[in-house]
Amino acid sequence: MRKVALGLFFLASAHCFGSSYYLSAKGDDSASGKSPYAAWKTIGRLNSTPLAAYDQINLRGGDTFPGTLYLTANMLSVKSYGSGRATIDAGSGDGIDIYDVAGASISGIEVKGGWNSVSQTGNTGSGIGAFCDLHGARKLKGLRVTSVNVHGFQQCGIVFGAYPSDGSQSGYSGVTISGCKVYSNGQAGIESYGYFDPKATTYAHSDVLVDHCTVYDNEGLVNGTIASGNGIVLGQIENATIQFCEAYGNGGLNRYPYAGPVGIWAWDSDHVTIQNCESHHNSSLTVDGDGFDLDGGTINSVMQYNYSHDNVGAGLLIAEYNDAKPLYNLTVRYNISQNDGSLNGGGLVLWSGGPLVHDCYLYNNTAFTSRGSPAVNIFSPVSNVYFRNNVIVSTNSFLVQAPPGQVNVLFQANDYWAGGGGFAINWNGSQVSSLNSWRSLGQESIGTAKTGLWADPGYLKLGGGTTIGDPSVLTRLTSYRLKLASPMVKAGLPMSNVGVNPGPRDFFGSALRRGTPDIGATQVPAVVPAWPRSDSTTHL
Image (cartoon, rainbow, N blue to C red; front, side, top):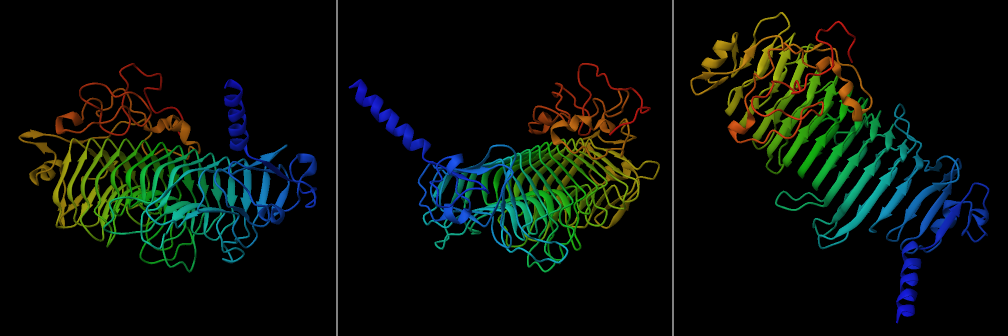
C-alpha cells in the first residue's frame, strides 16, 4: 500500500512540475526544445506547441526573441535562464497574451514594443496582458508578474481585464505585480478593468497586490478618447493594496478634455489601500495630472503614508464622476503633499461631477503649496467630510477654497499657515481673513471649545522636500520632521474622541502615542529622536 502511495505521489509531482521548454537565439526549431542544449530558436515554434498545465518556458538571458508569446494553459511560467534578462521584442503588437487561463507566472524578463510617444506610432498593443471573458462571474485564480521591465507599448505596459458578454463580474483573483519597471507606454503603466455595471455589488477582480513597482514616462495618447497617461490605475477590484511604488513623469501628452491622468489611483473598487508610495512630476495638457486619487465609486478605502509633490494636478484627490456608483467611507491620513496643483487642483482636493462625495475623513495630513493653488480645494458641494489634525499651508493662494452648497463639512484642530502672508479662506463665496472669523462660521470648534492654530508648524524645512526615488525609505524626507519645540506637538484632537481609529503609526512609521496626537503627518515620537533641533542641516 505504501509503494502505491509513493507511486501516486511521484506521478502527481511530475504532473505539477510539467515540462520545461527552452529558447535560445542560437537554438534550432527542429530540436526537442527540452534542454538548454536542445533549445528552440523562435517564439513561433513555442506557440505551435500544445502546452499543458505547469509547463515552464525558459528564455535564455541576454537574448532577444521577436514576436508575441501566447499563454494558453493554466499554471504556465515564463522566466530567464542563464545570465541576464531575456527580452521579448513585440514590435508593433502585444508582448505576452494570457487568455482565459489561471496561474500564469512571469518573472525576470524584459518585454518591449516599438511605441514612439513623439510620433505616436510604432505599436498598437500592450506589453503583458491578461484577459478574461468567461461567463458566470468566474474568477481565474493566480497571476504573478515579478521583476519584469516593460516599455514601448501604445496601450498598457501590464494590464489585466475582463469583459464577458454576459455582463457578469468574471475576472482574476490573487494577482501580484511586484518589483517591475513599467515605462514609456501610452495609455498606462499598470492597469486593471472589468465589465462596468452601475447596479453590480461585486467586482471583476479580487485580492490584488502591486508592490515595489516604478512606473514612469507613460505619457499618454495625443488623440485618446479617454484619459491617458496613467501610472498605476486599478478598477473593478475588491481588496487591493498598492504599496512602495513610485510614479513620475506620466501623463504629459494627455489631451482628452474631460478627464486626465493620475500617478497612482483606483476607481469603482472596494477596500483599496494605497500606502508608502511617492508620486511626483505627473502632468497633463488638459485636466488632472494628479499624484494620488480615490475615484468614482470607490468605497471603504484608505490612502496613507504617501508623499506627493510637484504634480500639475491635485496631490491627494477624492473625486466622483458622473454615472459612477456612490463613493463613500474614504480615509486620507498621514500623507504629505508638497507643491502640487501648479495648474489644476491643490494639495487636498475633493471634486464631484456626479453624486455627492460623502462620508470621507481627512486627518493628520500635511499640505504645503506655493504654486498658486489652495492647500485644500473643494471644487463642488460635498457632504459629511471631516478635516482634522491637518497642517494646511499656502503661501501664494487661499488656505482653503470651497463654493456654496457644502453639507456638514467640518474643520477641527487643524493648523493654518501662510509663510508670512495673511489668513485667507474662500468659503461659500466669502473671504475669511482670520481664525476667529473662521470659527464664527462653525469651524474650528467643538461645542464651546476652540480648536485650530494659526502658527508656523515648525518643520525642519517646510517646503524643502525633494524626490526620494525609493518609497521604502521615505524616512529620508527629514524636511518634514517636527522640531521638538513645534507648536504642533500634542496640539491635535484624539481621533478616538470622534469615533475614528487613527491607525498604528505616522508617516515615518513611528508608533502613535497614546493620548493627544501631534498635528500633521509626522509625529514626535515618545522617545526623544536623534534628528537636529534646528534647520541648520540640509534636508531632503
